[in-house]
Image (cartoon, rainbow, N blue to C red):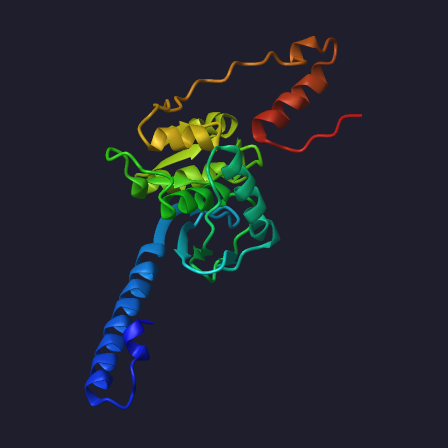
Amino acid sequence: MPRSLQASRHEPTACKANLAAFEAWLAQSLCLEAEFFRVSMSYAQVLSRAAVGLDAPLVRVEVHLSGGLPSYMLVGLPATAVRESKQRVKGALQSSGFDMPRSQIVVNLAPADLPKEGGRFDLAIALGLLLASNQLKVDTGIRLEDAEFVRELGLNGAIRGVRGVLQAIKAAADTGRRVFMTADNACEASCLRSGEIVSVVSLAALAARLQGETVLQEVVYRQPPRRPAECDLSDVKQQPLARRAIEVAAAGAHNTLIK
């Protein structure tokens, strides 16, 4: 508090001066506090997909950082595996050369009434934290609104596959968005021949791509090699009736039992 406030309170002139000084000090303090909260608050949104049966509804992963003691809250009807994503994401960030934000963190998986299961939101949460904390600057030629991230993270920063890839790819292709996924899931999903699929191996590699430092190749569908059959009907000799029965059953998709 300014020293002028220590003046004698019995003097009217000094009292007015003290009051004016106090008002100026209070206004300055309030401005500094408002500036602190304005700078420390930040928001980011990344798109992902849930898995509900044969459907893959869109999930918006919202990350909000604010000033105060460090804390982490995950809301949006998450299952146990989703709530455990905090430790996976933290380990992946540190292993990839980033820092876990030391702020009050709130992660919302919208819509809130849709159950979320598995580790498929790890990558989206990690990217949201990097964007909200300004540790990741997306290249101007990349639009995150046109991309979806459906991946699990390892503690070493590696990106792992999840179940329900095909329906997520199809749903993203219907909206014209690209999907980032691991190489094994990307080869599986490329058989749909729809949408843009980009293969990534780690969080660090994806961050470098989003910042425009590297280029990731789009996965192109390749016809899988045919494996020779283990047995052939021509191997059956001197059983014309049995062979005929098998051929008729196979042609009509009938159940067959031969003893």
